[in-house]
Image (tube, rainbow over all chains, first blue to last red; front, side, top):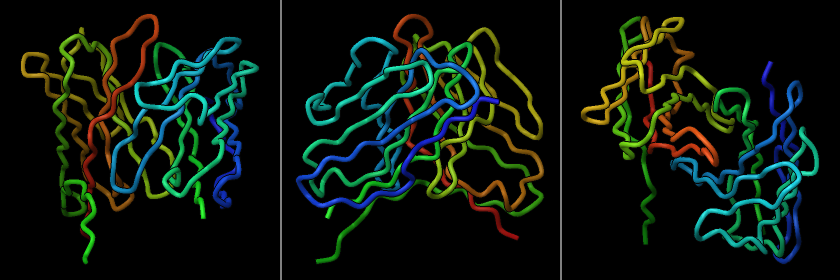
Length: 114
Length: 113
């Protein structure tokens, strides 16, 4: 149980285009999902908390107009990187609240902006 | 010029030995702690958790110790195996509404055959 999937696993896009990343909880419902960003050899940095049916809460310094988050159902949250630039290249990871504050993580999405 | 990247601290252990990975957490109000294992190119994998009303918890081949006085967390892995090679992160949280995890910097565990 407690499986989280992400799609796509890798994406390469051109500068100025937008990219959508999906995060799904496969065998449980998640009221809350989280989006993280991870640069090479670094830790995970929380970008935003996504609650089903309401607006996401963004961490300080994260541009909400650039990183659009939608949590339309109890099993799906999406992150759209708008007008992507090379500095947005990173490993994006989502997680879902399971029970008692345990978070289970997706396999991550490697975004490369050329 | 040459670029210098960040490097995570590395713990190198012999296969079969016990490993101890340490973490200092920052928030004295944190009451929930988790250890995650992350293999290259993958998402973090839950290993074991502990709540602040405990100071020790054991799983299969792993033990987590919590010292709230000095805000220190450790992960002990018994009989370390090559498959244990990965980056290990501790994470802390204050449970309740709007709870979220804060991750430590990570330590690379390298197992020598």
